[in-house]
Amino acid sequence: MTRARSSSSPPALHARLLAWFDRFGRKDLPWQTNPTPYRVWVSEIMLQQTQVATVIPYYLRFIERFPDVDALACATLDEVLHLWTGLGYYARARNLHRAARIVCEHYHSELPRDINLLMQLPGIGRSTAGALLALAHGERHAILDGNVKRVLARFHAIEGWPGAPLMEKKLWALAETHLPATRLRDYTQAFMDLGATLCTRTQPACSRCPLTGDCAAHAAGRVMNFPAPQPRAAKPVRKITFVLLRNRAGAVRLMQRPPAGIWGRLWSFPECTHRTERKIQRWCESELGFIVAQVERHDPLRHTFSHFHLDILPVVAEVTGRRPAVMETCPAVWYNITQPDARGLAAPVKRLLLELAKHPARKIHDANGELRKTGPRGRSPQAPAVSGRARQTDF
Ligand code: SF4
Image (cartoon, rainbow, N blue to C red; front, side, top):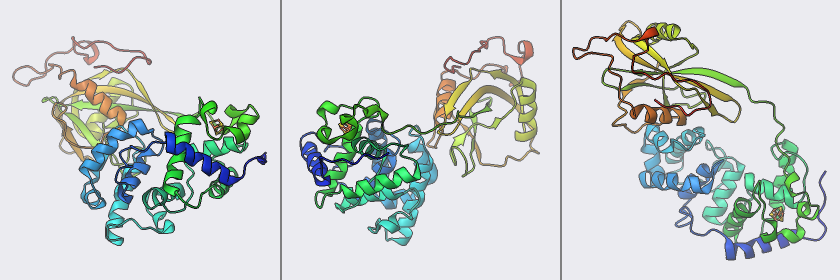
């Protein structure tokens, strides 16, 4: 049910929002100084699903390395993913890189100003295109990111989950209605700031909000009822085993993942679904061509995606030989964990590599490079037994 507001006309909202912005809005964010379309674009992509404080250091490193769209287009995807490592949602980085190449090739290295052309670029939806044009050029376009959806849903007390098509249609119409005739740059930033700093999801500060007087949810004492949460089914759980193959020099095998699917084009460990030492050993030999002397299981960890949980069992496998007849089907490298190079890594991969770097390769080879005798079931005598789901993975 949508309750009509009776005491406030749309212009009142933007006037109060702008007055509030003049006093309290954020004006010194890195992308607000010299807001070129490229810089605004990069910031808007990074800010999708990520908070400002998290984005700032990533943004600064990214802009330093890729100061303009040409620099980004000329970079390899590996370089881009490397600078994105830890920020998550890697499709954003892949799309940004792909779009930069299109902009250079088809638009003379200038982002188009036509919203429809912008929306044809990979990774740019209606809200991002509107934000880009409003923030970079001061053009009159609405935005509807998560913050704006929440403010509008509360201000108008609109029932329903904002991701539902009908609800989204209503919110877009309202976002358009509230647009002022001027100061689009400030208004757009103000709306985003209000949602991020006052009308927050869990602790809305209504007493300090410039919209309190006309906010329908506040008037009804039902602020926390809006917006309605997404109706959820329980997230499925997938299980995989990360095989951390380690060679005699202590380097770790990484393979580049295919472009489609999770962590596309990022570097990760070989993975299988086996859980037992014997099967993992056989798999290493038949699928990767590596003979492994021993396999150590370590604490599992869970990585949660938007649509499923991934339960990862890391095992460290010491390589002692090679079956050259086996061909690996994707690019692979021996990764020097003490002097890592620049490549994109998924967050749990990076975390496991850091843990592994703390612990040098176990001395399972003697001075002549021959395999030393190991403990029961292949576990080296000095290797600690580890178990339990809840603990941090540690090597
Ligand atoms: S009054 Fe409260 S609920 Fe309404 S817009 Fe302001 S902060 Fe959000």
